[in-house]
Each structure stands twice: as structure tokens, then as C-alpha cells.
Amino acid sequence: MRVQALTAVLAAELVLLASIGGCGRRTTPPATPLTPTVFQPLRQELNKSYAELFRIAPTLEYSQAQIDSMREYLKQAEDFCIGRVDDRADQYEKQLAAYQEKLREPATNGGRHNLHCEIQNTRAMMNQAKVLAQTAIPVSYENRKAKLDLIQNWPTDLKTIKQQIASGAYRDRRWGNVEDIGFREVASGQEDDIKTGQDAIRDMKAAGLMPRAIEDPEVVNYVRNLGARIASRSDLQVPLHITVLNSQEINAFALPGGYLFIERGLLEAVENESQLAGVIAHEIAHAAARHGHKLMVRATISSIIYQAAEVAAIMLTGGVASIGIYYAMQYGFFGLGLVLNLNLLGVSREYELEADQLGIQYAWNSGYDPSGFINFFDKMASKEGYVRGISWFHSHPPFYQRMVEAQREIMFLPARPAITNTREFQQMKRALARVTAEARAEESEPNRPSLLSPEPGCPPPPIISFQDQRQVEDVCQLNPEQLAPRHGRSLRAD
Image (tube, rainbow, N blue to C red):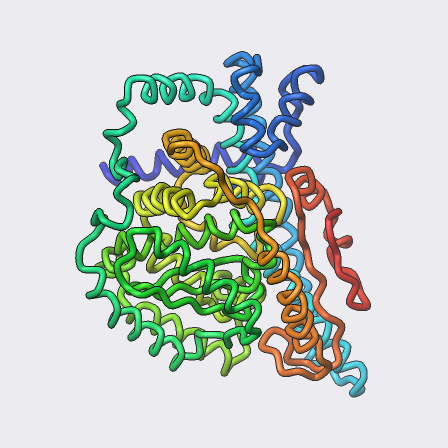
């Protein structure tokens, strides 16, 4: 019976595959499902910020059928886009095999060098395409679907929130006693996590997973002072230790015991102090609620060391074992942000929502605009492109649920004057620009040893990127030959 059932399932899948192309890929772009007078305005709404949509959604008038049609269109567009980029990755893989076959042929030194450069860049393009298809494009479309959900559901959710405020029922929510922040206990035993965090840091340094820290006093002191301000107005009961890492990945993470790491890419990406305060408060919430400790029942430090061994093997062999490791090396440091998000803090949707709620409370209690967190989330999801920020979204709750829960918490908090930006933030940004320039100069030094570019003297691999919602279609429509520029020209879909 099991064999018969399996055969029936496989037969049904083969019929489906035959209708949409090999490997389940959609081979043609979807047709516009609505009239232009409906489709174009609705499409424009999906490019607006969450803050703007929260404001205007109750005034929009789209029927259920129109929203359903747009949702199906987005699904088909995502399938088509992923299929196109997957096809590119396949073509790069074939081209790579052809180049490697040429290695068997005799060649001059110059010809051999050029061939090595072709292999190097083709390998980079192949893996970039895989990153886009497996993570970045799905994140882009998940964001659009969330905004469509917001247009559909927010008017009803808003009425419910207003009723909860009017009746006073909002005070009964978990951690609704915001007047007791710092005196309440969201998780007991925080001090027991200190040694765990120290051991994790020691092991990761020993495994080569920890990049060097930024030493510029203007940058470091600013971030530590901001973190200390928020920690003193939070439920954290252990000392906060902040390290600013010289990594271009847009991320931040907290190890158990109050050890917080902020990456250079995050400082570059935030536009004002309230956005940075929102992210730091979110990570402090992870530590205060002991999420790392709770998740380590399933993901121990040994799992990090296992992946460190995998990274070490890659460094010795020059190969790329997995797309996740490739992403971590190409767009961040040796997988630290990715590893920690997957194995410590990015596994549980429940914990992410808890950290969102507590983090918003801590930012508010520290005098900052609590909307900063939503604004940064929107910036990351809509404008930055996702390759350097992929791990920030990995395994997180659905975007719509996350945004609505955050907006609800903001509406429940008592109104008070709030800080959006400061002069100190601008001073930090100027100092950070010098740090970034120095880091990029080091990265671009000729003949500098590089895991991804072992052949010296080659042009840098071209970069595929897209920076807002409109441009994801541009990436999907590019032909493979357009993605193989020569002479080190950086390709951008804009």
C-alpha cells in the first residue's frame, strides 16, 4: 500500500512538473491578473514602507478577489524569478566545468592565469546566483506578500487594538507592566549564562570564527554608551559587554550572559539613532529573556565548533562546501552571524517575537522612538538588498505577524517625547566612514591572500545586487550573458 501511494504521489508530481517546466521551475513570467487601473496602484502600494501602509491601509479599497489575484501573481512571479536565477546558476556551473576541463590543455603562463581568473569569477557568479535564488529572492517576495496582508488585514486588526486600548484589556498582555521594567523578572538565572557566553567566545576565537574588533574610540565608545543606556533601562540583570566587529555583514547578535556583538555593516546601514537603539534593544531582550540558554538544549556550542571545523577544512582545501558557508564568507566574516542565527537565536519564532516586544519596550523606556525598529526592518526588507542582511531575516517569524505585533506594542505604550537622532550619532557615522574606508582598502590590496580569490592579479568578481522592490524584477530578467562582465566591472541591477 505504501508503494502504491508513493507511486501515485510521484505520478501526480510528474504531471505538475510537465506543466511548468523541468525541475518544477516556471519558465514564463506570469500574466498581469488585474486591469492596469487596479494592478498598477496596488503594486505601488507594495513598494511603500510599513509605516506608510499602517497609516493608509484603512483608507484603501481593494476587494478580496483583487487581493487574492495579486497574491497568486506574486507567487507565480517568485517562482519565475527563482527559476531564472537557478537557470543562470546551472549555466555558470556548466561554464565552470568547461573552464576546468581546459586546465588539462597546455597553455602559456599568461593564458593559464587568465583561465584561473575565469574560473574564479565564474565560481563567484554561480554562488551569488544560488544565494539570490535560495534566500534573497524569497525574502523579497515574502516582504511583498506581508504588505499585501497588511492592506487586507490591518483595518480589522486596528479596530481590535483600539478596542483593547479603550477597555484597558491591553494591560493584561504578557509583560504589560512596562512601569516595572528593571524591577520585574522576565527570566530567572541570567547570571548563570555568563560562563556559557565566555566559553562560546573563547571557543569561537580558537576556531577562527571571530573577526577582529574595531578599535576606533569614537565608534566603540558611542556604541557602548548607547548600549549601556538601554541596558540600564531594560530587564537585563548582568553586565553588558559590547564588541564592535569589523565585518560588512548587516547584523547584530547576543551570546548568553550579556555579550553583545554589533557588526560594522549594521552601523553603516542604520539611518538614525532610534534605528540602532531598536536593534540593540532587541538583542538585549534576547539576553534578558535567556533565549540563547533555552535554545542551547537543542543547539550546543559543540555545533558551532563542528561548523568551525568545516570552515577550517574549506580554508585548507580552497573549496566551498555549502551555499550557506559560501554566503558567510563572501558577504560577511567566517559564518559567525549565520551560524549564531541558525543555532542560537534564529531558530525560534516565539523567541523572536518576544525579543521584538521587549526590545520595543526597552527602546521606549530609554527615550527613543520605538518605531525605529520597524523603520530599520523596513529598510532592510525593502531597500538594502538582502545578501549582506540575509541572516538578519533567516528563520524569523512571518513579516506581517512581526510588523503587526510590533505596531500593536508601540500603540499600547504610553506616549512620550522620543529621540530619533542625535549629534553623537552623526559623529559616530563620520568616524565609521574612516574605519570602513580603511577596511575596504585592505580588502582591495593587490595580491592580498583571499579564500575566494586565490589567484592574485585577477579583477574582482562582479557583484549581483538589487536595492529595492522594483529591482528584483530587473535581476530576474537579466540574461546570463549580462551577468558575466569582464575587466572587473561590478554589475548592479539598477
